[in-house]
Image (cartoon, rainbow, N blue to C red; front, top):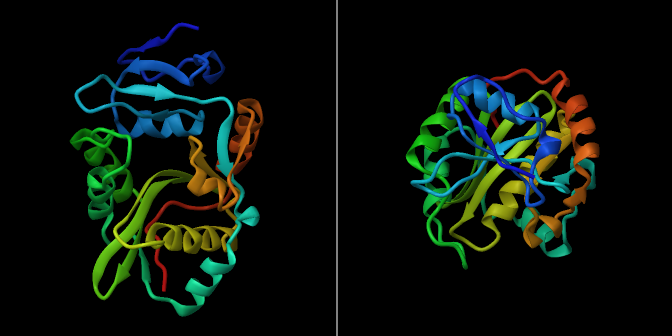
Length: 227
């Protein structure tokens, strides 16, 4: 399969035309309109700093259904002890920058550059990108961020500066999303961490069908809060 050139026009190729590794196209921009169009089509940006924007639609797709969340015995005990405090949408840029700067074994640099931070901050101001912050003694020790459209949440990245902090925040988020009728969490690419929490691979065609139904869900944009 070829890699398509994304021009200035606000259009993407059919996601089913993506290469075997999931890459669909190169180019375009990170405007709000283009990002929202991409997410609604099951496409997301992922590229190295200093390189052109690359757009992806993997097959299979890694997703988590909120009702299928798996919480281990040790995590259930940790949640009962409540060593962390959780907030939503209070430090969006801080969370993005922490995700950018956190060390990840086997990775050099980060795909989160200044253009991406600027673009997702715009989505955040529109109530369509959200951060989950995990605190310990007043210090930000973990968190994650992503995009919500309808009853779908698209997870982007997470970080932890304390053991289990990101997992703690993710579990709180998934339970919160389930309580509000969210149908689908897009985890994009496989990780053992998220598989242990119940995420699973599904074919792209199934993902696209379920995504269409989820983004039609009645979940309005706006700032999130958690207490």
